[in-house]
Length: 204
Image (cartoon, rainbow, N blue to C red; front, top):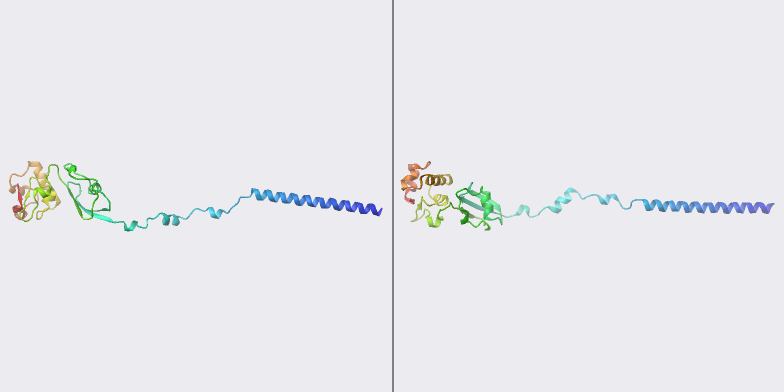
């Protein structure tokens, strides 16, 4: 009887140990499966870069120091004057900054593709006008032909600015030119005093 009891105990012990081993193996398998299905890596590393970082990366460090050029655009443009343009700009850019050509501008006398230079004067002549060097600028021994001069040449006369030079051109167009120098007094804005100052420096 005692041997049977011992045999029963041994059998139950082996069954218990076997069940424990099976349980451990099942739990290990579940752990492996959970680990395989779980997402890997940290979401913190996927965060997009801050806006500040992107701005610093793309900013042009030389933007504030970009060189510019000053050009003086005169003649047959909508808004003659002094303009500041980025260095490397071309004559066409300067004309555009001055409002573009007037209807009477002679565009063929300009090289629109020329790169501008700092301090350059861009003269836009009227159609049929003679360049100032040929028309004659006011100076020692030189006179301005008021029937052929453009606004640039007229502005070399004492007291004649862009608006008054344009009035002279408008009068010349409307009346077919000046018959005599005295006809300048018919232009609005040229009174006796101004006429006396320029009379010796003009011709027809």
